[in-house]
Length: 371
Image 1: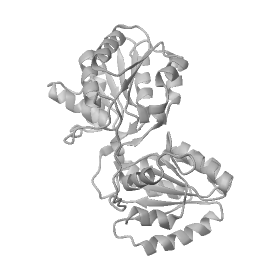
Image 2: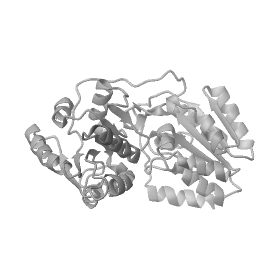
Image 3: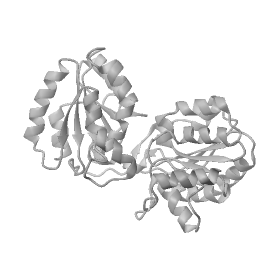
């Protein structure tokens, strides 16, 4: 279904969400039509944030907002849906558009499998009426379903369109780029060279895929790395849990700007805890690159000052290889909590593969290495 026809049927003029590759057609269309505009389109820090933004929009306008997300974000909306939007509380109508990763019977990466199995069940448990859209869905079917949804919205309920792979199409083209010089893979290669045999916790998406490939290119095993293939935004908390219980080891966290924003409260906890053996690195390209390149707000805020305010002892920003190496070596030698923001270009090589080990194998090898 053409995305313009789909959004015309919706008749909505406010969208908030977290980008998803399954919804790239929608995300690109919104960026093409609105860009980032607080009155029409906001890329939120996380899905719960988007649901709350939607509530504010409805309170101000009386109209029905749209919140988009990958199905992995359903967990982040449970609280605002159950305790804010639900008709037993404020009764705020909302349409959710959910990209269905890990759909049963469709091959996908391991982090999506269980989430895919429970996608419709979670919506049902939240009392959200759902309709699945695929490549064969006709506009008339969507129109009929919207008539049903409108009756539910009048009762203060929420509804959802669950989008199968390839169901939505966008004819236009949106290019995402920035002026930064270093690629993420180059940055990670420099981190690996300095960290040596120290444990590394890497964030979800292409960062973990690139770390895996770098180890293979160096002829090294993968036991020193915990590849957080799912659970976006939680790598720094995982790293804190390891650092607190392995004080004799220098622990490195390779984070992304989108992930760091998603659960930024983790930085406050880390800063208050101040583990002397943790190096928290945020590779900042100002984009949700793994799911298409849509922008984050990280290009407009000062993460270094935020880290300092949270209590990180050392916090620096670097933008070139020479300064990166100097800062990494200083962090390795330091006996204090360190934060490094690395300015990064958008983009990755086209032939980037995925880890060939399972998450279970990664966990066992990592725990063995820690011991």
